[in-house]
Image (cartoon, rainbow over all chains, first blue to last red; front, side):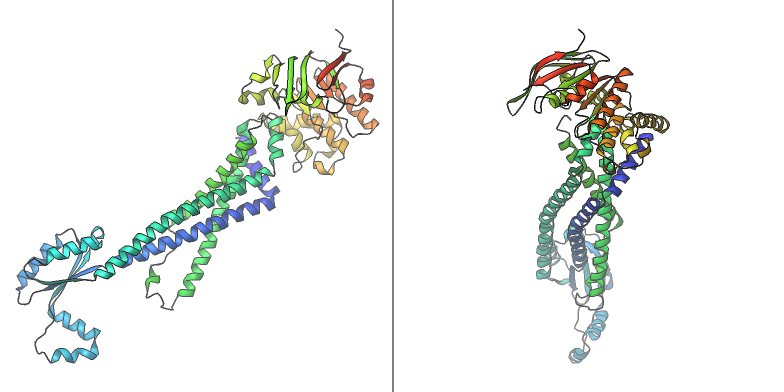
Amino acid sequence: MRRLNFFVREALTNIRGNRTTTLIAIATTAFTLACFGVFLLLYLNLKRVANSLENDIQVIIYLADGQSPQAVTDLQRRLKAEPEVATLRYISKEQALADFRTQYPAEHQLLQGLGENPLPASLVVTMAPRFRSPEAVKRWAERLNGIPGVAQVQYDRDWIENLSAVLGFVELAAAGVGIILSAASVTIIASTIRLTLYARRDEVEIMRLIGATGAFIRVPYVLEGAVLGALGGAFSLALLRGGFEFFKLQLGGTGRLLGIESNFGFFPFQVSLAIVLIGLMLGCSGSLVSLMEFGRTRA
Amino acid sequence: MIQLFHVSKYYDRRPALQDVNLQIRKGEFVLLMGPSGAGKTTLLKLLFCADQPDEGQILVQNRNVARLRPRDLPHLRRTMGFVFQDFKLLPKKNVFENVALPLMVQGMSAFDTRRKVSEALKAVGVEHRQYSRPPSLSAGEQQRVCIARGIVNGPIILLADEPTGNMDPDLSSEIIELFKTINARGTTVMIATHNRQVVSQVRRRVVTLNQGRVVSDEGGGE
């Protein structure tokens, strides 16, 4: 307990006593983690938007006219049992006509001239997540075409293919940029912590010469690295939060992004905690690597 | 207490010590003389396990320092005190904290640490500067603090490298008297110096080094 007190006191004294290097280390950690965080935030939000767009992948099944209500119910029951179907909504002929009138108020006279309601009843299906690839949708649509009572199956093939390509690209870019940014962050933060310790290598040498064990020398420095790293992580979160809120404020009400901004969100608590912990671990490892280098001499 | 057998040390293939044989008994006061570059500091560094010999064996308190495991090194150093030529005091810690360091690393209680540090500071006459930081002290005061740190844990051996370097004769004389007092309490003392005044003041065993070799060993009593 006495030693723990000593270690904590030493770490805090070192932080207070080396204000400039401490501030440089915290700022470097904060800015580096913030760069990584900007990318992560961008990626997570793109992913959220992409997921929300994926929910729009719909297949419309137009039903043949003149079917009994029982036949339509049977078809609905049969389709609901299929694994490809996430949700299914029935739109009757009357509902289709009402929707048309609402959506195209200027053109509704066109239908009046035809007398009988020409619009077919339909089933609007949202695909289950694992069947949203272009191939899966196409395969299922082709199979539906052979089912009695189905007049026509329609889906936006280009939209699905484009979305799929964009998502694939985002995933690939995320992996590549993520690896490069992570490596850069680790190197920069570990080097900064190392530099702050390098400036104090004499202290390490003196401690060793007066009979301090390796652990006794290392613990306060590792604690110090952990505190600097965690503080850097916390400041990076503050920077990111501020930047994110500013970005949202700028976008708010412009309507330029067709409502997808409603999907934007900051990191969940677990990711925020992970960023602080990453800072903490980088601080610890930076200290340990430096001390290992100093420890190569016998003195 | 200290035994060196055919010890040699090279830096960049140039010999710093060559075939040195030496035996120092418990409680002895030994002056290590010689001009700059004679190998005095190298010899002290080897005894303090800050470096290893390239040839030969060194026994300190019957332990072969070359074969000592790194984890045993701190424990051997805790039985020794070292007074560095450049003091090696931590500038951001005050005098009390600097002197207390050897006791802190041993895990001594705060009460005992305070008592022992006060005794050591009193012995070297700088107890009134215990809350000052080293940069605000004179060279003589810093040297005293360094000696206090060297003796605070009651070492069996005290090694000092040019402890009177850059000091005026009066101050130098005071510091040497301090070492004599420490030696009188039973501590083996070995001082490296090129100051002839110290030899005349101490009148004890003098080992002279030149170009890494022992060229004379006088006043050992055996």
